[in-house]
Length: 118
View 1: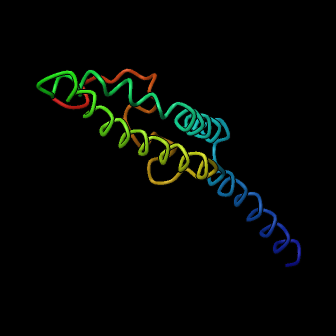
View 2: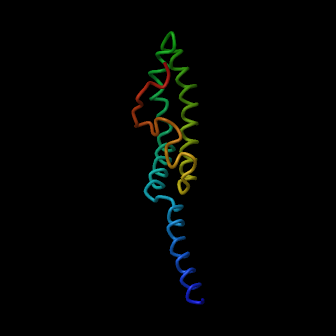
View 3: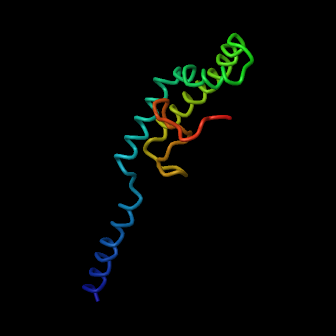
């Protein structure tokens, strides 16, 4: 009976290792999430440049477009910096979206498939 209990406890220990390993975060995905967050924090000011064409397109003249770009760029800059800080702080955890980017495009260097607004 002792041998059977010892075998059973060892078998249960071996089977639980795969369950623990399945819950471990993927190191490469966590590192890419941290890098994406650091990139977003460092380059968040680039939103002023990326939002300029849309601002000019939506305004009647260039002066209004530049003022609109300042407002729009500031909002997008704050959003990108906040998401970058969030990615950096939560990089060890997969979260609801399993290490996927929170906003699109994931960095200012990533081209979007569709324009941001039409």
